Amino acid sequence: MAERLAGAAKLPRGELQRFEIDGFPICVAHVESGRFLAVADTCSHEDQSLSEGWLDGCQIECPRHHAMFSMETGEALSYPAEEPIETFTVAVDGDDLLIERGAVAA
Amino acid sequence: MVDLTRFDDVTTVWRCPHTSVQIGGKGDEHYHLGTVIRLDGEEHARRRKALGVLLARRGHAVFRAKWLYPTADAALDRLLAEAGPDGAEIEVVTWGRRISQQLAAAVAGYDAGTTPDGASKLFEMSQVMIAGRPSVLKVISGGIDETDPAHVAGLEAKQAIIEMFHKPALLRREVLARRAEAGEIDATDLPMDFLMLAAQKIDPAWNDPTQVERDALLLMGAAVHTTTNSLVWALQEIFAWLKRNPGRADDLLNENFVLRLAQESLRLHPVVPGLSRLAMENIDLPSGGVLPEGTVAMLRSGEASADPAIFGDDAGEFNPDRPSPKKISRFGLAFGQGTHMCWGMPLVIGSGGIDGTLVYLLKKLLDAGVRPLDEKNAAFDLDGARGRHEFGRPEYRVRLTGKPVTSAELATELSH
Image 1 (cartoon, chains in turn purple, red):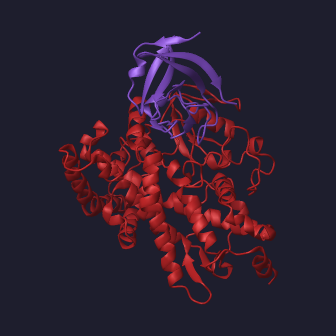
Image 2: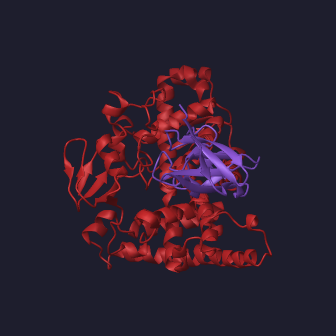
Image 3: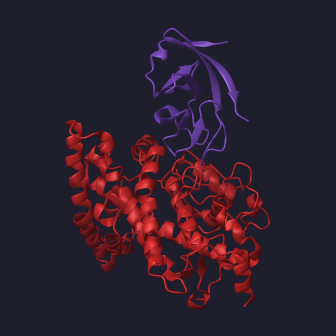
């Protein structure tokens, strides 16, 4: 079932923001192409918020040890992350985003 | 102090949130106090994030394009231009240190240290400083002797580095920061180095000029011996491996294979004897013991990275074809683990490994046909040096022929 993040679609392009759904932190990105992507906010390597990191295309870089993840698949793309992160399906509804739990990359 | 050498015990302590790196004391105020290696919790996270700009993808791309490639290429081109009919002979330890010092100066923002001559001068001075810098053991035990000539000379060298390299570079960047703030120059045109971040006070701790000095000196010094020693170990292992596998010389043209060679060498040859952590509460160890609260654990990354329980019965042997244990890096614990994992790791191994300093330098040397000058190098027990910290050779001579060695040439060389 989709959860509504009110006003989240106003996030400027190229930026990241942390939200919580039932206490679960997620990171939403508004990538340059205009799409919204969402992943679990906690790096799979260490307890670090990914939304404090950097967005590079559709990839997100953890600010602590620079692990890279795909925001489309959740796949860990570089050292030192070994495990993927969960992704979320995102739909736009006016100024809001509808978030649904997706999958964890294999 | 308790020594830990098992992979599971070492990683348990490294990843445990109930440990601290604040193992400072008298003597630390000159060098490490308040730096990223002495911070815990939120302060540590904030500092890593502030410094992380230099290592994030864009920062690393700038470092590679502006510093790593031109510095390494120029150093090699100079050698090959002066080569005789038998190629160019170099002493890799000195050569590697000068390049590493230039690169470290670039990361720190020490402009005058980014040329070969400036780097030589900076290296000389930093050696005196490092020789006088108290070890963790001395700081923990309160054993600092402020009248010790090495300690005094170290502080004098530190001050000389600050006057000659640090202050002029910081002043320049403070002017640039004000101009950027006034809109006179674009922020993207600012230097991408530590002193620029400090001049902009990205971390509030950098309002303290002595903290800026300690942070800069830490960055400036941390990458020189570590990178150089890793380079020399990797070369020795590659040559030994080639002797055992002369038919695979062409594999050295494959940068992904060179990465495996580098990773396996890093696993077996740690650049520090160990790293210390203070237990803030009792920590249960997988080996069955307990690390009592208040104890300092010395985490022996070299021994742990050669743990047969993780890497197999041949864990102490050099094998670049070794299958990687699940969820464990090929380089083992070379960069530590946990929240204080080596800050410089992205610079050394890059994002995917092949675009970092170590592999780039190795590739440049291998592409230039690097071969050992065994007749000029002292005998050395490489087998006995694996899986623990050793200071390594004080010098190591090689020859560059100008083109990669082929399997046929190698077979001929080894048959003589």
